[in-house]
Every structure is written in C-alpha cells, then in structure tokens.
Image 1 (tube, rainbow, N blue to C red):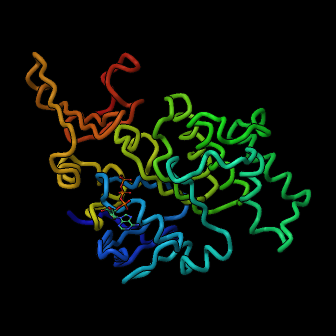
Image 2: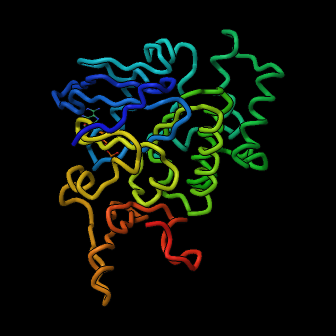
Length: 298
Ligand SMILES: Nc1ncnc2c1ncn2[C@@H]1O[C@H](COP(=O)(O)OP(=O)(O)OP(=O)(O)O)[C@@H](O)[C@H]1O
C-alpha cells in the first residue's frame, strides 16, 4: 500500500517520521511509522488490537521514548508543543482510576493547570474556561458529581471538556466511542466537527469502522507500522482494510437476488458499527442508499 496525498501544502498538524518504539521487555510496538495530517482535520487511527495505536499516542505525549524517528506537532517538535500545552490526551476508560474521589469540575480544571502559576490557584479566566468547556460537552448539570458516579459516555465527555479547558490545538482521543450509546457518539462527533472548523487537529483511535467515513476526513491504518494514510476515501478501500486486518475482520458479502447488488455490497465489522461498502466506496451513514428514499451516492 502507498501513502496518498500527504497534504503537503496545508498547515501542519501531526507529522510522524520513521517512529519506532521498543518497550523495556524488548517488544517492538512501532517500527518506522510515518504519516502526516494537516491542521483542521480529524484522522482515524485504525488497526487490530495490539497494532500500536495507544503506543503511538504515548509516543506523541512523550510517555514513551522513541527508539528512532521524529514526531512534530503544529510544525514544532512534539516536546515543545507539550511544553506549550498545545496537546491533550483523552484516555481510554480502563486507564483511569474511577474510584479516585474527584468532582467533574475538578477534572476539567486540571486542563487549566498549565495556564496557572505554581500555586495552581484558579483565577476568573480559568473558571470561565471550565464553565465554557462543560457547557460545550453538555455536562453543566453534573459538574459537582463524583466522576466515578458518571456513565461511560459522560466520563468520556468530561475528559474532552478537560482538553477544551486546556485550549489544546491537538487532541488525541483513545477509543472515545467504546461503551458509548449512539446519541452520545453523535454528540461527540458533532463536537469534533466544530473543533475541526476551529482549525484543531484530532487523532482518534477507533474500532467503529462504520463511523470513520462519516466524521474522519483522514485515516491511518496501523499494524506496528503505517500501512496507509491519507484521505479516508483513498485509504478505506477493501484491499487496504483486508491487508490491515487480515482474517480478524468479519467480512460479509450480502447475498441478494439482484446479482449486481450481491457483488457490490460488502460489510466489514471490527466492532459494534460495521463499515458498509457499495462497490468500492465505503459509505457514511447519511449516504447509504435508502435512508432518504433515494439510491444514495454510489
Ligand atoms: N508497557 C508495555 N510493555 C510492553 N509491551 C507493551 C506495553 N504496552 C503495550 N505493549 C505491547 O505493544 C504492542 C502494541 O500495544 P498497544 O497498546 O499500543 O496496541 P493498541 O493498538 O492500542 O491495542 P488495542 O486496540 O488493544 O488498544 C502490543 O503487542 C502490546 O502487547
């Protein structure tokens, strides 16, 4: 597979060049991984379990050291962007200790720490930023609840609010839709769309293949290295997905009486929401034939 248009003329978002990570036990989790995304974009990070998605996030966040290669963010070394609080990480639920007694508004205020002095005493600007962030994710009513008492979807939104309070320009989301109902997923997708309009850069790891063409303008296919990256329409092809997932994906060819259709329709599923192909085109939900009584876009 080859990389499609690497968006050379656009303002830089995330640029990963030949990145390799080896854990202390000798496990090489990433090998010579390269891709780039522009500012004002949402990129899906897609691959099987253990393909290195979380490791890539950790490498961007400086939690693990690169054994080789470089990572630049917004045209500067990732370390510099981290120092300037330009990058935020929305973790997987399993990575958080939900028994820790902390209020929703306190978690969101953590996003302001980098903007405060060493005493970490919040000022009016910090409180305004927290209020605005909670309003944006629709959690004002729950601000004084213990975070452990929230549902999975609400917890995800708290961490997204923390990233917004930080005013991060680059937001890394580690499986934000796991355990989240469709309404909440749609709300998160709508918010990510607004953030893209503001020129922010999102990298979203997900197993919800069916949602990717709907809200991600770019995609990176990972399996210890980058197999393909670029615009979603170019990357999300049957051949690329088959190469990235091998036998892991559930792949159904629908049998219909109409023979032309039977060959044309295929479903790839790695998780809850399947990806549907019509011909060689991976479809977004709103473009599927029949939704609006038309034949849809082919
Ligand atoms: N702290 C660690 N020490 C040693 N090996 C690790 C460590 N963390 C991850 N690995 C290994 O590195 C590889 C990549 O793991 P990683 O968690 O990045 O994958 P992933 O794509 O995020 O997986 P998933 O979809 O299951 O979340 C796996 O083989 C994993 O076992």
